[in-house]
Image (cartoon, rainbow, N blue to C red):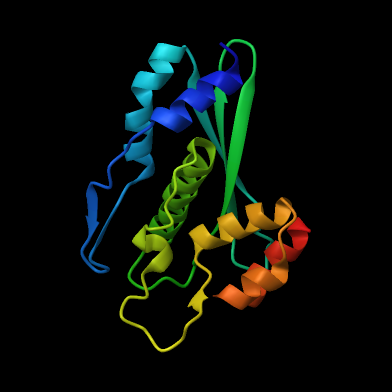
Length: 182
């Protein structure tokens, strides 16, 4: 069985429930750990493994830019590998979190979405992407980190920046990241 066939098997048969609850947003979600746990039987059966790498993309001394983590997930067998990535910004101004927690949260988020990209986990109904936390009043929503990852993939495949901007509120930093994809 080729690596493509192995990945296709996982993508079509994979199931991971949203078993964790966000009490602030009042929604259920799945974590990177949940996804990895659900893939272990497939990995054993198909004799392959998952490797996750993270890279800090921006952290220029004296820069006002927020740091960004690029997470790459690879599925590997004896002969080949396939990979998927996610780009996640680190909110260094996040209230109520120490700096290590901010990096850890971004790391977990990046892993979750890179795994989701690799295994084609559709989180379009996931409240991470749709929750406004009670802040209504506009038909456009802010482009979330999850949405940014999907938008980067969309543009990389030939999608239009205008389509994204018509649907979402895009910050200047997000637009710059998206422009770099073009």
